[in-house]
Image (cartoon, rainbow, N blue to C red; front, side):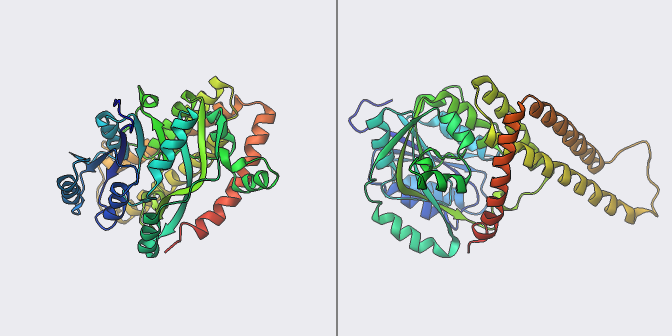
Length: 371
């Protein structure tokens, strides 16, 4: 912790095979209007030259620290950053996104001036073809926000305010609904460092941010929101988020959602967002497990002329059997957890899920296909 008038802000950036985009991200961080930064680049076993780029940044700017580790996934990389961070405040960035020049300045001012536990701002998506344009615009810096809003019960807001159409309707009616919207992503946020005491991301899973979200938000009292875009989220067609469709991917989201449902029940919060994530991924997991099993059966059918050893089971067969068993267990646990909701709770959660699914159809078509 620091005692200076300008507190130290640690920015954690997991880096994996992002050589084509990394400089846009790191340049936007080092070019922040707020200068007292600790920039932690965690090279998670990159094989494309990203590791060397990280070292070059560290050699050129003493604010940059680099951690090289064997590939272990984003959760492990984020944890390494949290374990290393010395700042009074913590921020995260993905290795291919671009921060507005005033990102830390404005988020820190909102956090300190309101006494909130976390501050957040708006973000936008953009395509690869817009990289230069967005980078240039981000360097100019966002205008001062018209106002800073503070709201209580962040866990309730996270779980219930997530449908875009309802947010627009609420804001049109004067309820400032958009103010209370935020997701499980860690970027475009600034946290007081003590919020992370005892909280770390699960490692080796896909849904590390979802798994940590409810623990983190349940610990907060208030969140400050500023109505200005401070973060630019690159949409890459080759990203894991856009392409992963394996049963294990969906299982990780089911597992995270089940735990979040329990946290919501403990705090008396309607688990609408976790219901949406749980029910959707439980369905996709069963479909993916069945498809993977069918694919294995089809590949084995071509070996009918070979003599099979009936006393042993091949590794692929064991893996498929485990995948099917996991999907079956997840389905049973999902049914059990949903039964713990009251009839009106299930109706409200199911209604919000239906609205969100319709919005997702548009999102997948318009946003995920950005060029």
